Length: 494
Image (cartoon, rainbow, N blue to C red; front, side, top):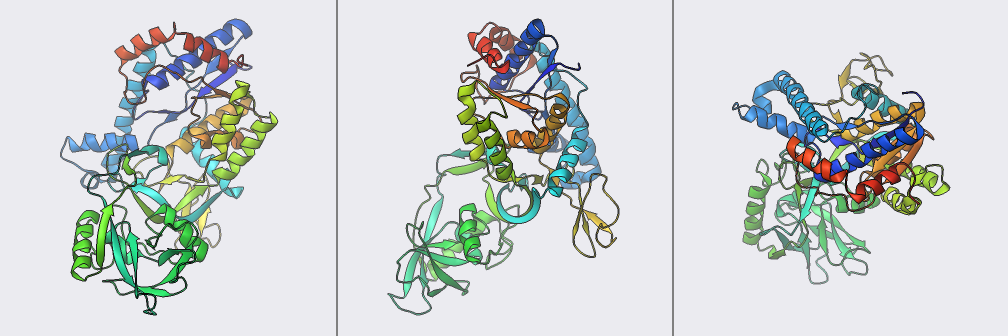
């Protein structure tokens, strides 16, 4: 369809299928394409898909569990085969739901998604926008992978979660000898890097001895500290920045599955270790008391497990830098936003964008196109996956991680847009601004953005079957919201 207008909705997760709200957005895009064809000639829409993500991995694990298997006992070959089967089943299910709703995105458009993702990764790496770095990320111990903030469900503070208050003796023995300091997660005592105190605290600049483990740590002032606390930088994202700014060590004391790896409680699961740590601290006379942890609970949306923060080495996209460039293009009018009044909202979403961890620990998916040299330890980054190191010709070991499927979907959409441009259609909340930033970078000046009006019918919580999709789509096509949204997609809204 050369010369056709093209619309691209936000990527759809295959592992779940569309929610009612997502279906409403797709109906609006479909109506816009139909109106565009009637008025101006060829118009179509294509649908980026998020395929091998943590939701799909969960479905595969459930499929294996029905046969009494788990990923380890099944082995990588069986898991890969089952992944392909489950993905095909889900693709057929999603296609059935869309067909029942009368939605017909163009098929057979664009490159192979895995190739698009690898190509984009290499291009961004060569531009200095992707790097391998040590940072604290949020992980799910059950799914055993990094999880994005969007995959973490915040809730009311968990019942029974407590913050320990410890009496931490100063090495100098001055100013009363002890400082009462909070520790979030008593099992992480061996991961403490410093005792942090408010600016002006008399203990600042001293050293303190950690109870039970006996290790000495510095006492450092911090203007943001409301009171003394023990810094655990490898296992709290908000602590990591404090430690990094001061060059403090960040000992990792817990594995990705929540097992302690050092200290008196090595080998115990985190909650069992926490209970033993509290008992040991109380016996040693170091536990001043506890208070309820008022922090919101954080759980993996996929499996419901409490997530953890953990320091590790991952591939990061400098999406904050990309988002800054995209925001400038929006402000200058180089990226058209429909309706125009939504431009500031898009700019604010882009301004809030942080760097993107694009490497996940999934058992299936598009591999990160990196090989690590067994001799010089340097990475070789290439789509083709060369068999020898680009620096010393040594043997390469595959990176072993998988590209974030959202990054793959955005890369695929960028390839589609690059040929003749198009309009990315996003919900009113402008989720995943990183996708806009990546598309702006990879698709050049061929991107426009349409921000749908608020009030799409349906919730984000309930998935659809074909019958429900058909009934909802029928109502949506008669709904005034859909006509308004289609006008936004076509760029006709002021």
